[in-house]
Image (cartoon, rainbow, N blue to C red; front, side, top):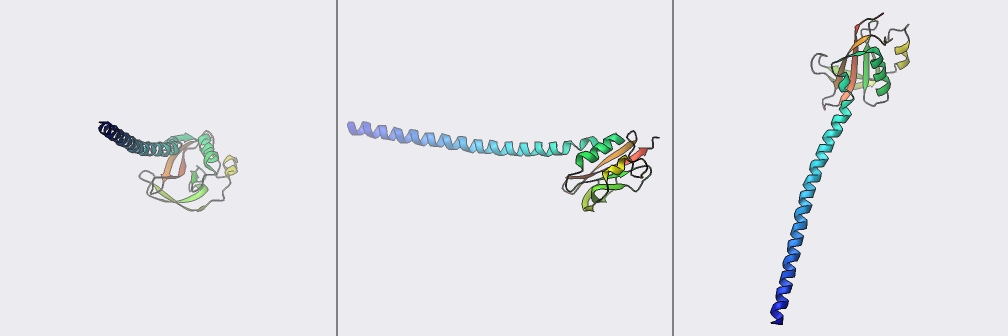
Length: 163
């Protein structure tokens, strides 16, 4: 009788151990799937946040002071360029990197970096120069992305010339 009860105790112990290991494996697998889902969600949120700083400039009208603020804000960003077309300089001046743009500004625009601009941001504050950005002027803003949908630049075109 002693052997039978010992054998039942050992069998019950083995059964409980297998059940416990099974529960731990199931929990581990479900936690791993939840972690992958959370990582994907976090990546999506991070992408949205990195692009959010450009939504202000996406096909909107901004003031000249907002244009110069954008220049200061993004001047040190790599692989990024800003073009400003003023009433005196309709061909525009690139700041930061120079972009090669395909498409029209009313359609999809794709840009790729083609070089660096040596333009001085201080010129946008000098009223005597063609690059002067009137703080009260109105500018149409456009966001330029590359083929991977990464923002590569901004284009500001003056729409009204304010004295």
